[in-house]
Amino acid sequence: MQECQEAHGCAGWIRKGKTWGRSACFLLLMVGMLAGIARPAGADEGDCLAEARLLTAEQFLEQAHKAQDYLQRLDTPVIEGEKTVREREIVVRVRGKKGRSATRTVVRKETHVALSRRITLAAYDECDGSLHAVAVRVPHPLPAHAAGNGRKAVPTFVFTRLTPGYEVSHEGGMGVARLKFSVSKDGRPLTVLAMKHPRIPSRYWRSGDPQLLDDTKAVVYSAYQPEYHRRPFTEDLVEAGVRRWLGDIRGALEGLKQSGARSFAFPEESLAQLWPPEVLLMLGTIEQADDGEFRADALRTAEAIAIEYAMNSEPFYYANSSADAIGPYQFTDNWKGSRPGTYSSIVRRCSDAQLISSFDRGARDLKNSIRAAVCLLDLELARMPDDALRLFREDYQVGAAYPIAAYNAGGRQSAKLYSELPPGDLPDAAQSLDLPVKAFKYRKVVVLKKKKKRARTRTHVHVYVNNETRYYLVKMFTAWDIVEDWMVLADAAAAKPPAAEDAPSREVDPACISVAAVDQKTPCGSSAQ
Image (cartoon, rainbow, N blue to C red; front, top):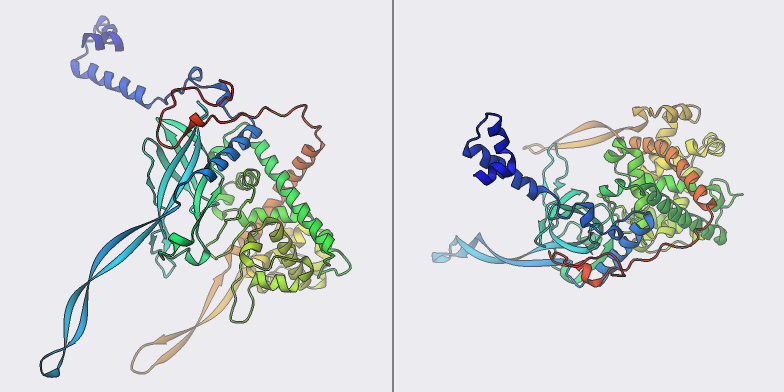
C-alpha cells in the first residue's frame, strides 16, 4: 500500500493532512490500471510508422485496391450451411378397428439447413501498415420482425464475429453496396477498405434454399464507410470519384452518339446531345441516396456516393433495393403477364441505343445503364405537352422534374404532377422545395368481403399520398447545387498541370497481412525495411 501511495500521490495527500484509507488508494490504483488498458495500443506517434499513415487520396485508393486484390485471392467460403434435425408432431389418419377411421399422433424427424453469409472484412492498420482479415457470420435470410399496421416485416441485421481478437460493430446497411462496419484491435481503430461477400441471385434474396450452397459466387466490393469523411483528403476522394463517374457518363453518351440514336421528344436532335452529363450525375445520386441520410446531410450523402465511384471498378453493380431495383441507376423489370417490364420495354423501344438485352447484366453495367436511363427519360419527356417541352428547353434543371417523376413512379405520376403543378408554377415550387401534396395524392378503390352466411361486399375508397416520389423530386432540386459544384471541381482538376512525378508505390509486405488476431512484431508498411 505504501508503493500505491507513492505511485499515485497518496503520500502527497497525507502531507496535506488528509489520510487516505486502504480502500481509497486501492480504488485509485484500479482506475489507473483501467486507464492504461483503455489506452489504444501503440497510439503514441512514436510507436507508429510514418509511412503507414494514409495521408493522400492516392495512397488511400492504392491501399483499397490492394485490399480488394487480397480478398480476391483469399480462399474462404462465403456461404455456409449447418444441418439440424428437428422433431415435429403431426396427426395422421389411420384405419382403426372394424374399418373405422381413426387418428394418431406421430413424431417425424425433419432435416433443416440453416444458411449464413460469411463476410470477410479487409481492415488496414495505419499504425504499423498491416492488413487484417476479419470474418463475421450473418444469417440468411435475415430475421424479420412484424412492423404492425399490416405493413411488411422489417429485416434486422445481426451478425457473429468469427475472428477472435477484434472488436466489430455494425454501423449501417445490409447489402453488398450498403454494409458498414467499424473494426478495432486492442483498442486501436482499423480502416475497413473492402469486404468479400456472397453474391446471392435475386431469386434467393428472401429464400433459405440449400441450393444456394452450390449457386453462390464470391464478390469483393468497397462500400463507403463513415470514417472516410474524417480525412484531410476527403475532398480529393470525392474529386476522384466525380472525375471517374463523368468519364463513364461521357463515354456512354459518346456511344449513343455513335449509334445515331435520335431523341423521341425532339426528333431533330441526337439523343446524346439533348441530355447533358449533369442530369446523369444528379439521377445517379438521388437513386443511390438513402432518404433519411439525404435529409440529415445532403452533401455528405452525395459525397459518399462519389467516393464509392472512386474506390470500385464496378460501382453499385451489386446494389439491390427492396423493390427489386438493381444497378447504379436502379432499373426494374417486373413483367405483368405478357406486358414487358421497364427495362425490357426500353430495350425494345430504344433499339438504336443498342442496349444489353439481359436485364441482370444490362441494368448492372454502368455505361449501359446510363444509356438506358437517357432513353427512359427521353421517352417520358416525349409524352409531355408542348409547354412542358418548352420549359425543358429553357431550364432543363426544372423541366426535368416531369420525366424524373415518371422515372421513379411511372407516366401516371408525371401526368398527375403536370395537372397539379403546370410549367408556369413549377419553377417557384422548385425554388421553395414546396411541392403540393395533392400532386401526389391518389384514390384507390378497395373491395372488402365479409365472410358470413351471406357474402357481402363493401366498396371503400382509400386515399394515399406517394411521398416517395414527392421527396424524390425534392432530392433532385437539392442535388442540382451539389452537381454544379462537382462540375466546377472536375473542370478545375482537368485544368491542373500533370504532376512532376507519381508518388512511389508502397507494396504491402506479406508478413504484414494478418488473417487471424496476430500482433505484428516487425515494422510494416514500407517496402524498404
